[in-house]
Image (cartoon, rainbow, N blue to C red):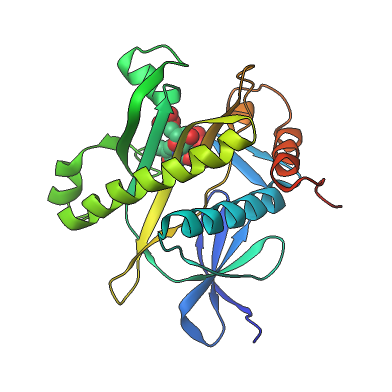
Length: 244
Ligand code: TMP
Ligand code: ASP
């Protein structure tokens, strides 16, 4: 069966979401080469980013699903940059898991980047571009109706499992998983699925030993060419170089 792009439903900073002709319960996620940081204040186009992120996200989501039993929105790879997914209503709670202090955790709490946490820290951020994704706690999500208690409990449970699986994955490749952000969505029949993407855009990845950054901080902090970094990650994962 072939699936064709329907109307553009949503344009995000790094992906577009299209409807699917003749279906109301599926969408096509299209990855873009656009790179943004600090909620769009910094912008660039990075050659190959779409193909690398789509490939890595597909691989990591399948891996996580297999290792943990957590269900994802993925259905089928349609091309290097397009993925057929179940249509979900995204939960406005961005789930961040940290193993090592970095980024806003270092800034907000005056901690040294690189401090290894005694156990994984799970945090919520409100998914809102105009507000720059502010950090929040259960009470905000519950009071403002962004998630129900049982959903937050599932998000916490799932995030811990995803973290364990991803830490093992990156560990085997000589990389420390510092932190990452994931999103979940609700299906019309009440299931909660791991949605969006798991890619180096939303993770911090440090090479073991050197702590060299292998993620979007290369772009955020002007540390080098993000395309080179992402192609290197691709080769680390898949063993071969990204084709032309
Ligand atoms: P932070 O240190 O800026 O709070 O980010 C923690 C991790 O989550 C980092 O890997 C980047 C990722 N993240 C996103 O990708 N998008 C977001 O909107 C947020 C809040 C975090
Ligand atoms: N994800 C946000 C953006 O793309 C924030 C960041 O990555 O710095 O602008």
